[in-house]
Image 1 (cartoon, one colour):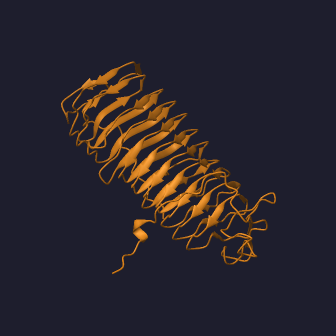
Image 2: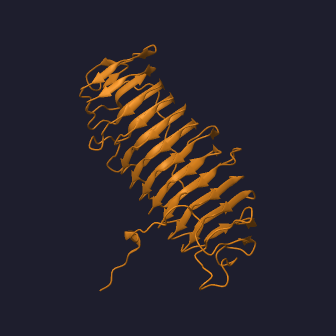
Image 3: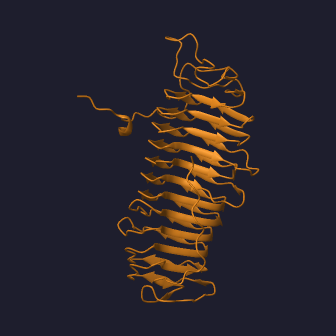
Length: 360
């Protein structure tokens, strides 16, 4: 199942190392509230062992952070009401941050790139609540509870991140309203024990070009009770997942195309409560569960374009077998292919170590 939601961030914590650009001893009491400011420089400070935030900034723009030491703090960076910020080149992989390496609330038009927010088994790498027009690109996050958390988040891009051995890699949850227009593209995700990509109450999301291997469930989209619909799940490469490759729950009008789903312990594609879906040009085969599992009758082709189910005309007379490849006789592909039509190279990966057995 998807991970439980995180607790909401506490309001205006006082025990910060650097707060609103006023330097203090670690753990001192501060209640400063700056008016909006710009162009400030925060460099070469030792803010280690802060009990809440090592650095807390409110209503800042175009600031510079460099050379600060955050070791053994509860949180490293906490930014609120930030516009046009650039957070880049930070390496907190050995800082032992217990909770959140980077927390941002109400952030707009900002770039978070080329950082290493890896941890030591828990907490969050990037935690953003509220914002639009942001780019999270090219970050490395390993060994976190959740690598990237996005809440109340519209028209943002999460791309080209390397997310390895976290409990969950990218999660949009604990969301009070519908999010829309977000894109999760070209991320390299592996070893997530729960979910690789989990989107909650997302309207028309774009999930494209991600590589997922050895994750629990690779892609999980859940609109909950909201009116979230539509979206594109395309060109993703999913191999050797420990549960399901793509799980779509009540997300009407979504397109699933050009994906590679193979080698999962569970099902390949799961459609629950969906009566309107476009499925075509996928490679779905060699999963241990159903290749497709749907609780509604569904045609697994679109515009006379079907999918490849691992069979060819040389060895097989029937390319798709309803009730064998799918869980029911009314879950069918009327136009299956005898070869892959996906415009990506099929991956060659070693078997998952969690599934290997030794012999005497």
